[in-house]
Length: 361
Ligand SMILES: Cc1ncc(COP(=O)(O)O)c(C=O)c1O
Image (cartoon, rainbow, N blue to C red; front, side, top):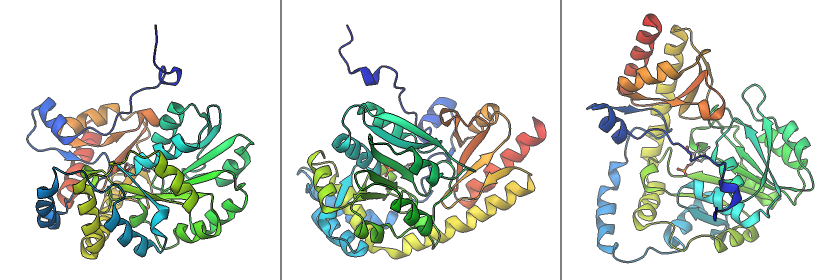
């Protein structure tokens, strides 16, 4: 007898990019470069003292409401502290929103292909998925607006998008919001916000005008804290209050709170990361052009590459050479792969191995 929930029967387990440790173990390699999960390649070692000091407190639970972090972040974002909901990675905020808002059978609009977690989590909550295809590798906002029905509860928008790296500008988003009824929650996932250009939406300002928005950001990408798991959502007081009701009380551990607080105060590290990433992304663009390989211009720290034929054997080859890129089969993009901008040394090796493969395959 099946005693688990019906929604889980057909659900596949989400496969993240392979970890470095796993590839080393499985292939017996000493040096492995991970260009698969859009992390930055530098750990914020300036946190060593702060995290060491925090060690003496680890026998105690962390603060449930992230008091100090909330205060600093609210000031930075110019919102009220109670509008912020912290998550164990911004991923968790997606789960919280679905758990809090979806009644079984209600509809969630997701684009396709985009970040897979929206659809997976929405299915778990028993939502009906309404998919809207991307248009020229961008979110098709007109088609999304047309897809809204009386049953629509949440619209997910990854901005910038993963895996395409494309983004929606302020004007586009502003016009789109006018077409969406206030009973629908528009969820902007801004995990790559720090890498995006100047005409990126000023989502906090849009939220001030309309209550039916939530936007999430993360410390996993530009701040280099993916291994500690901390992100947050910003919404109206009402929506944030509801999300806090379904949040596990100690979801943000002490090291994550301490690291995020210090990270917000270190503008230098962030600045260096953004400029390093932009330079290296340009290096990868140039080299891909030299190799005559198509790619989508990206507002993030990764690039979607159009390989124009099945990437399986390239993926296996690179893996054997100690380079992990992201296959996109689960996204329905078997002729594409995604590569994260790494250190210069990593990027050079990736290009060399790619060139070798092209010459010899
Ligand atoms: C679009 C998007 N949203 C959210 C996340 C999850 O980030 P976090 O580490 O904050 O859970 C990712 C991670 O790759 C992502 O690409």
